[in-house]
Image (cartoon, rainbow, N blue to C red; front, top):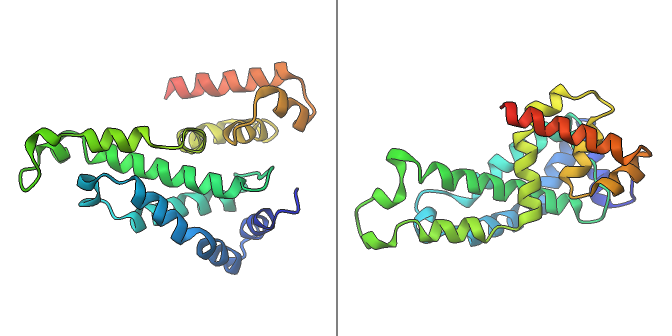
Length: 193
């Protein structure tokens, strides 16, 4: 493991150190709230509190972190991971508030009716793709991770962090074919869902 202070903090969280969890929360919470607030359209901001989004992101993060679900390889990985989880939660809230009876464009009031979901589309398109995709995949494959053998999980974890197949093979000292086979298995499990 790297000498990155975030990696050390994550290791302490994984070991059940509540002070480390609190320190990690304090280190990033304000910046994550700012990230979430900056991504909210005016309409969505009336329904979604950025602090609630960050709280939800931290809940998901800590549950998985305590199970050893994250491996940090480079400086900044923890920040990118937390941003990705936060943006995923924000995206989920945006989808929730545009679905069916909750749809924001069905609201009547001070907002012009032709404004529809343009702000929401800007929110979705403004996301940072790599961390968000990683976090989205992490949430989607939570169930899949449980179905993988312990020695297979690091392959998926490294992929979620943005590593390509060659990098994963090199890091885990296995063949690219093995990496490809496990990632194909993950895709099949996701398709079954």
